[in-house]
Image (cartoon, rainbow over all chains, first blue to last red; front, side):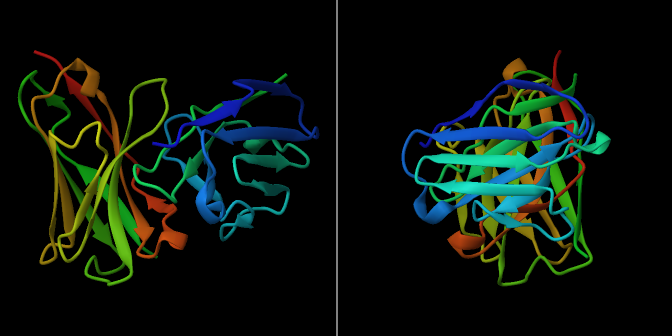
Amino acid sequence: EIVLTQSPGTLSLSPGERATLSCRASQSVSSSYLAWYQQKPGQAPRLLIYGASIRATGVPDRFSGSGSGTDYSLTISRLEPEDFAVYYCQQYGFSPYTFGQGTKVEIK
Amino acid sequence: QVQLQESGPGLVKPSQTLSLTCTVSGGSISSASYYWSWIRQPAGKGLEWIGRIYTSGGTNYNPSLKSRVAISVDTSKNQFSLKLSSVTAADTAVYYCARSGMVVATNWLDPWGQGTLVTVSS
């Protein structure tokens, strides 16, 4: 199975700052079949990005995804108070469809 | 818009079978365009994909759970279900259901149900 490793584990930033989250795959993710999800406490994950760089419906344009092969990133250009959450990457090119362990973006 | 809702017992005894149902509203589960998945998340930990079903009955399971998992669909009730046998405390988690596309290029998970906590304890 493809193992996804996210870094850092925790990112401590202030509102207005830029956040860059990394997701590295143990082998190439076929055709950039990579998604990013946001999860807030007590809530289900919410799809943010699919196809490595395509924003899901209703996702603000401060969220952007990039990458290919084994290295992907999620960037939040200017953190809003509602963006402090845990973010997961997921590959959906090969079964079993695996997730990274998550990056927590916390208020500094 | 499509919404998913999990339901089932919140407490299951060790060695028994966990059974959950996901009810789909706002759309037909019989749509030929989607797979229907189960995912779980132990408290404070990450997400684990359990498996999925297509409305024809075709399934894919995570090999780590395959020997204990069965996912089925009831199109008459617009529901799909999860059964996980021989549970232990390690199966304690929030269980989510979600939809994904039929084609691999659309296999991301969206939308998700709100999740239901299942505790395995005697």
